[in-house]
Image: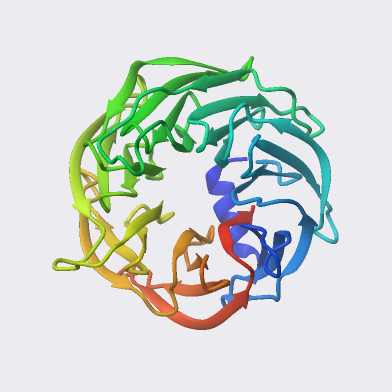
Length: 364
C-alpha cells in the first residue's frame, strides 16, 4: 500500500486504532493496551487491555494491519507475534521467538512485511527474524554481536544496541549502538531475511554522545539521530544508493543555560517533512524544530513542557494533526494538537491513564 493511499485513508477516516507498549510492574501495567483515537477532535477513548504479556516496551504493527509484534524486555530476550482481532481489537498470541540477546528494546518491520529486526540493548546485538504468511515468527536468521566500548564509564562499558531502523526502501538497516557510539550499517537480503555488513559498515559518532533513535524525512534524503547522553540531534544526508550517512549538522535538544540532568529518548519527523520533534527526559519536554526544505538542517523554534513527565516515546498521527506523548513516570498518555503553520505543540485536555507507557503505535 502506498504512502499516498495511506494518507488519503487517514484523512477521510473518523477514527484510528492506537496501541501502547508498557513496562509491566505490580499494580501498574499488565501488557499491551488499545484505544480509539478520534481524528476530528483529538479525543482518546479509555484504554482497554489488549493482552497480558511481560514488559512489551516496544511494539510494531505489520504493514497489512493484521498482526502486531512486541519485544519482551527481559533476559533471555524474546519477541511475540499477535493476531489483531478485527472486531474487538484484542491481541491473540501466535508464537514467540528468541532474539538472541538480553533486554530487547526496539524493533522494526521491513516494507514487504517479511522480516522483523530486533535490537537487544542488554546483549549489545541485533537480530533478523523471518515473518511467515500467517504472522508467526521463525527462528532468527541473523544475530550479530557488537563489540567495543566508549568514554562514559557508567553507560558505555560495552555495546548497547538501542534501535534498529530500515532505510525507506528497506535495503539497509541502521543500528544505533549507545554503548560504542556508532551507527552500524547492514544490508538486508530480503529473500532470506538476512543481514550482512554494509559498505560503509559503520558511522562513528562523537564519543560520549550515546546514539539512541533514528528517523528519516518523508523523501528519504535526510536522517536524524537523537543522542541520549549528550542531548543532541545529528542531521545526516542520506545516500540511498550506497546507504551512507554524511553528517551535516549537530544541534542541542535543550535550551541554552539549562544545567539540570536530562537524557534524550525519541525523535520524529512530521509527515509533511517541515518539522522535527525530540523528547527530553529530565527537562521533561518535547523540543520542536523547523526543517530547512533544501538542506535538511534544523532550527530550534521552541519547547512544550505542559503535562509532560519523562517522555519515553511519542508519535504523530498519520494525518499530522496530533502528537501523542507517553509519559512513562506519570502513567499517562497526553494529546497535543500540532499547529500546521508553525509546528508548535498546543495542549489539549485529552489525557488517559496507562501504567508506565513506553511506546505509541497507530494502526493504518
